[in-house]
Amino acid sequence: MKSKSNMLNRLLAVALLFMILQAGCSSAVKKPTLSAIETGIGLTEITVPNQFPDFRDDGGKIMLLYAIDNSREYFKRTESYPDSFKSIGFTPEKQIETLNLFRDGYVSSKSPQDMREFIAKNFRVFQAIGKENSGAVQFAGYGLAAFGDDVKRKWDHTVYNSSIGLPAVPMRSIAAKEGAFPLGGLAFAVIETGENTGKSFFVLNQDNRRAVDDIVRADVFFGIGKEAIHKAENFNATGKLYYLLKR
Image (cartoon, rainbow, N blue to C red; front, side):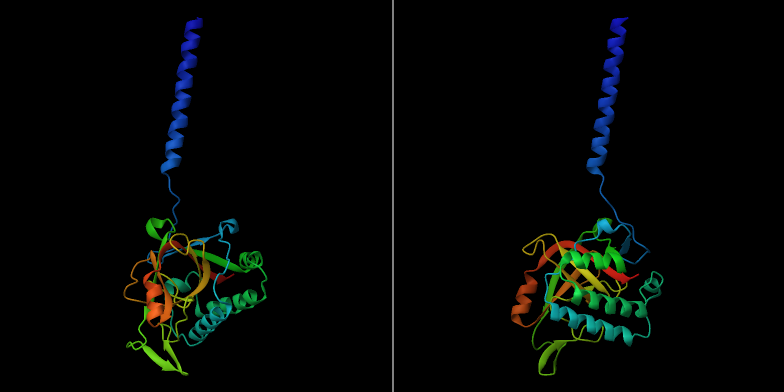
């Protein structure tokens, strides 16, 4: 009787160990995935605030305000906008409200914590679904020659008019796949690899480039001239990209 009881205990122990190992293997290979809102759109909405990034901005304030004003001007004169974005709230009118509110909060916030709380309270946050729906986005840089076809002289400065018809702003304007991300929209980039690991900054989706034809990629504008081109060529990283929209 005792022998049968010992045998049963051993079998139960083996079965329990097998279940634990199976659970461990399952959790090891399971990867978090994001679901696109709609086919063709490269975004998914984050509804849990504790999943938001820190929203720490490592860029220059004046350049961001300039880029925001350019997007506001773009939306004021935008006559048409993709229905796929309007259906989830990204209308030109809502984009202007987003930029106005964000601008006020950005100027008045005294710390990243203030900014994070302000955004959590007032904005919907969408994340780029990235590579294989993992949220991983490939960041590259681009710069332009001082005398290229796309570069013009304006107010005694050399400028490049982006796809919104207004000057691209170094380190604040990005190019993303047309139709997958809202043109003119306010975004937040987090760099997780390369020389700029740990850097994060607000950007405006203001450009479309032929080279950017994938929802897993976003290109950061570095400016005009040899130095800008050199820096852009050496900027290659992965990270995450988020878009903001006023509630």
